[in-house]
Length: 144
Image (cartoon, rainbow, N blue to C red; front, side):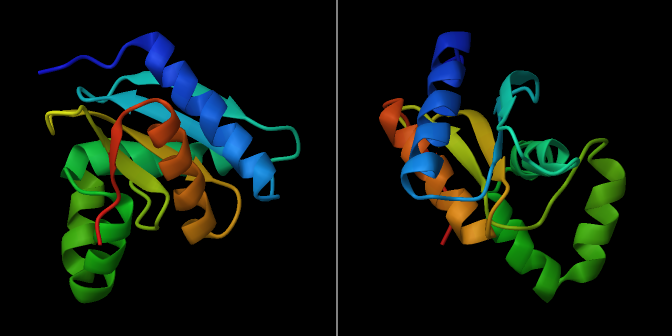
């Protein structure tokens, strides 16, 4: 399995913030976790609301914990709310079922981490995350 290096995680954060500014998003927070669930990089722009960072972390951490992008477990929350309620108790960390948390894969498809973004509409958060991942030369898995 490939390892997510700190410099790559920092590159994802920087590129995600750049994409958010270019798209005129509301101030965002970005969190990057490695495949074992350790926080590798985090930044919150000036002007983010108090809990935006925790929401970004919850999108990324939840994606790692459940092995699916946050958009996917957002759909699961609608279809099977009891499952998501139960999962939130066993995940032992934040779990935010809304778009903006994408899995990170290397070029061979190996899971190496996740990035979460929060601050604007969830679809816009996800678009910024996708741009950041692409700029770092990794493959983003955002679900369908």
